[in-house]
Amino acid sequence: MIPQIPFSRPVVLVSRCLEFEKVRYDGQVIHCQAVRDLEPFVDFIKVCPEVDIGLGVPRDTLRIVKTKGEYRLVQPKTGNDVTEKMDGFTDSFLEELTEVDGFIFKSKSPTIGIRDIKVYSGLSNAGVIERGSGFFADKILKRYGGYPIEEDDRLRNVRIRHDFLTRLFAFADFRETLGSGNMEQLVEYNRRYHHLFMLYSQPLANKMSHLLEGAKGAAFNDVSREYFSLLKEVFSNHPFSNSYINAAQNIYSGYREQATAEDDFLFNDVLDLYSRNLIGVEAVLEILKFFVGKFDSDASAYSRFFEPYPEELKMEVDPGRDKDYWEHFHF
Image 1 (spheres, rainbow, N blue to C red):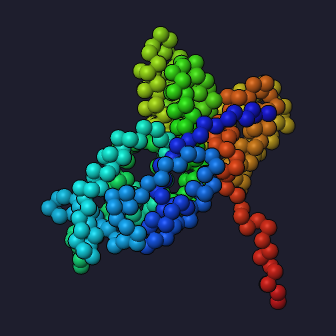
Image 2: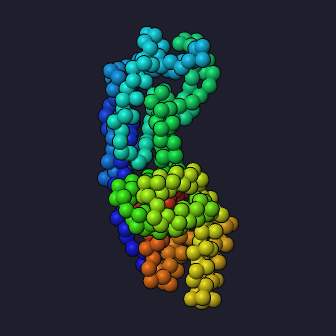
Image 3: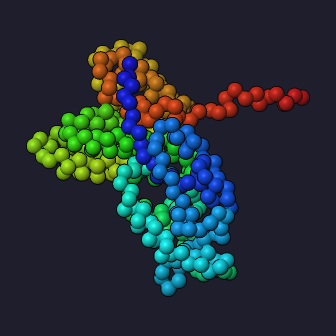
């Protein structure tokens, strides 16, 4: 049986208009299921840069304008330029932001959107000349590159949400480990996460382990700083089907001498079905979990591989599974 190891509580910077307050330019609050689901498990820091610099609700919309090579944040209806206010607020906010593990921002916002934000050539009758990040978000991305950062609309996707939550709770666990200042706890952190890291990059996962193996007598701060750089690098990759197949084969290979011919047949059959996209990765993980529980007396090293975040945060595999699609289909 895979032991249940408690998760650290992540600190997440979130757009205040997502589920919390009616601070959007049109006075609305935006539904975000991921934020709603996370609320019992994380500590949210809420921010709305536009309201926080004194713009009211409702308010005229903002746009990013590029003139003479300079980016300005302006309300086109009135010509009100809030560039300096936004820059000053963002710099002050970042100075006070001492503890954070991840970010969830409102998409398409000229202040807090992280991608595909329109940049115009002028205030009116002007075309879009490029796309980038919002004013506030751009400084977040520069300061917290490699951290879990996502937008509300992308978190509706099952794979993107899973990847974000995996990284978020790994970062929170690392922050807590870092706070201990204890090398043994860092080694234990790596032991719990090693097989998960192997999904993302086997070379980097091995490099992280080798770093700790050779750290005897080294200063904790130096080792943890290098380890954190590798942590961000390993999560810059994303696992695909072959990643899961390779990880499953690597784990199962440790039990070859204990496994029966029937075990081998079942394991290989499941992997074959998965490789042909006839079953989902959940089936691979379940059969692998069965073998780990069957053959390994201490399965704690696999805890984060099988459960990278609380089970309550998993999305339904098929929300329409029990819907009667034939109820009104009679002929």
